[in-house]
Image (cartoon, rainbow over all chains, first blue to last red; front, side, top):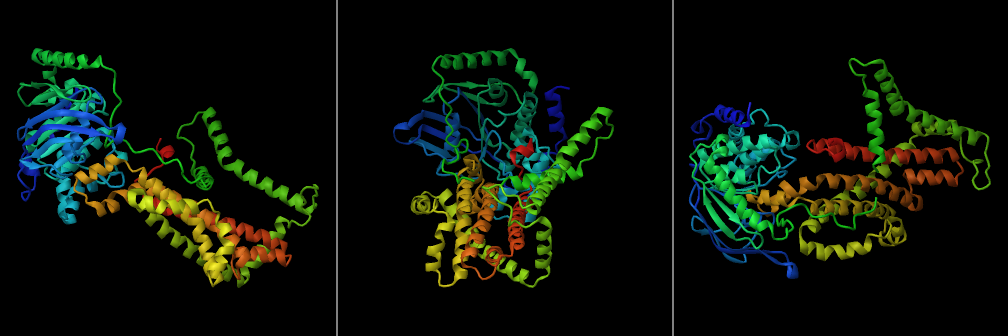
Length: 305
Length: 292
């Protein structure tokens, strides 16, 4: 059985959207995301580097955009700025006309791995956003159960994240973000740590959820196949300082299935992406920047035991 | 500090080991020798030490550099322990020691965890509080004893202070370390999910740092007993440390060893209690080596 067939079975076994979303919830909708002449610098003092230079993107409500580029080109940095964790040095970020000033649940952020709260069960992880909004326990657990069902994890409500596989953890991540009914979904290589089979399933699950809830998606990846399979529009970034070197419209009809990956038009687009990225690969490789990245090293003066 | 739980867990696994369902002859032999190595060998080693102690004490071995002439034999210690167990003074000794530990350790937990969370998370707190603490940290708690006696009108107060001093730094530093090691992506996720400043402490920082805090509490408990016993030997009226020292001054030598063993058991027991509580409070947490 191929990955896509399995994925289709999972997707088809899900209940229809009207049945799972509570009547009280806000009707799902995507927001218009405007990135205008944005430059971002990270680091302090002499170590300060310009990571992104004058990037302009206008994402229509409900559009699926993939950012594709070499390591260290600032894809994740741009996502961090859209999430509100980093402030651009120049330029403006707007969601539906309002300036982005800080983190907000209406812009959901999904990382690659290990960002579920390890001390909370699946249910409490997913219900967390509603807890922060002050929703009472019964209501938030009911909504969380519905979303857990939507991502195909019914029965795992009381497990801890470490008891789940990588793919299941990413399902929980997505459910945890969706409970806030985000207008924008920001995804930083969310399937980058998964094996190929699981990744294919997760891509189809994501497209299915996106079709139902239609948030605007900005999806960072360095996997060309993934970008072309998912996106309405692929934006290829150059090496640091990152700039958009090309915007490729991906015209394939939806719903997309794994069979599209061998379509001649798809192969042509893939060749184009490879050429753009290879052009950059001649430049020396840059170290990976992780402004929101890995945990800091432990201090040197730890108490001797 | 890690020797205590690992010994305990080795013993518990040894007692619950069951042979595989369909073992071949070779496998059975392997299991038997593994079980012997895990369960039998440590006990044999303890018995051997006991026998050596008995021999050395009863034959009054004198090696010149070290002499066992005044060391009580295991049987004498056992009967002294039995006598103490039935004496009304045991309760008073235990009670005052445990009260001092409770007060000193309790204050150290409040100060160490509280300050540690602030220092680990807020730059202002770090710059303001860390320099004086770094100056005080290398001073061993025992070196505080004379000044503590001068500073506290009651000897009870000075002893509680000494136990506090012994416990507070391991707790503080492990808390700071735990807070600093919190994955920034976890904090970013929480903030993107709508977490505001003070709830971030309760929902993310404290639980993420909890394993490190528990380690600090466990180490702090060990140093706490060490400092208490020293303080009691100098300033006490009652208490296990005082009992041990008093036994020396009145030349009741078996009671010295009883006191020593009691101190060891109490220290080990209280550390195990912390580890056990920690595991109960953090069912989600598994140390790296157990997870693999």
